[in-house]
Image (cartoon, rainbow, N blue to C red; front, side, top):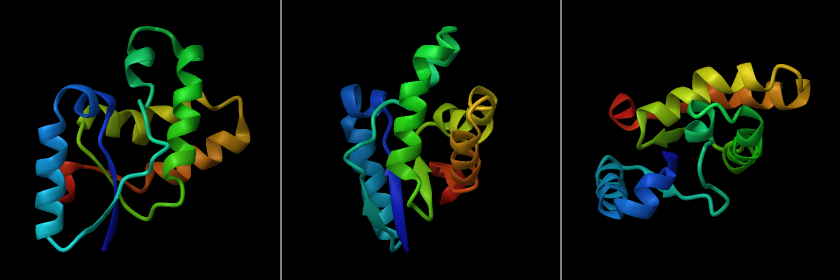
Length: 115
């Protein structure tokens, strides 16, 4: 099974050993891991800080980076929640992006939820 791993900006910058361990676990479970080069922050820290407009570039980038995935595994529950349950609130005035976000929301799982 092919799994797109959303490793999060915090894991990427400060805790790379967490990402490495997650890949090892998923591979032991028979998953083929894909790390989209385009992935960066999902925008959730900006959203939580009240910078919704500023977060839209990160939101759209995340959608573009993962929209071709069948399964996305996130190493952060709060990032998975933002993608699955919050993106549609912030894109409701942009129908094309809203549709893309809603499609993405059905594909993402937090790491422990997935395993």
